[in-house]
Image (cartoon, rainbow, N blue to C red):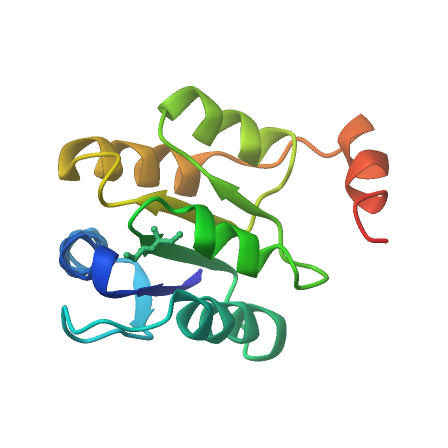
Length: 142
Ligand code: RB5
C-alpha cells in the first residue's frame, strides 16, 4: 500500500513524526510537504495528496493541519476522495469499515503524537466491510 502524507505549517512537526513512525513500521510512504513551519496554505497540500491518490497509484492519504478541518474540506471536494477528520480511535475504525475513507485528516493542535499514532494504526489496519455500505458510498457523489 502506497501512502501519501502532507501538512501545512500547523501540522508540519506532527507530520514529520507520523512520517518517520510509518517508515519505521515498514509502510511505503511519500512526503508531499510542507517542509517547514513557514506559513503556507493547506489547500495546496491537500490537493497534492488527493491527486496522488486519484492519478498516481497511491491508495491512502494522511493530511495534517491545525485542526484537520480545512484539509478535510479541501479533500472532500474531490470526487473519489472520502476524507475523515478524526480525533478518536472508534471513529477511525468505523470510517474504514463503513465509509471506506481513503484520506485521514487530523489536527496537530487537537490531538497529541501518541493518539495520532494510535488513530493512524487503527485506520490503516481496518478493512472496509463493503456490503450494505457500498450503496451509501455510491450516493456520496453528486
Ligand atoms: C493555520 O493557522 C490553520 O488555519 C490551519 O492549519 C488549519 O487548522 C485550517 O483548517
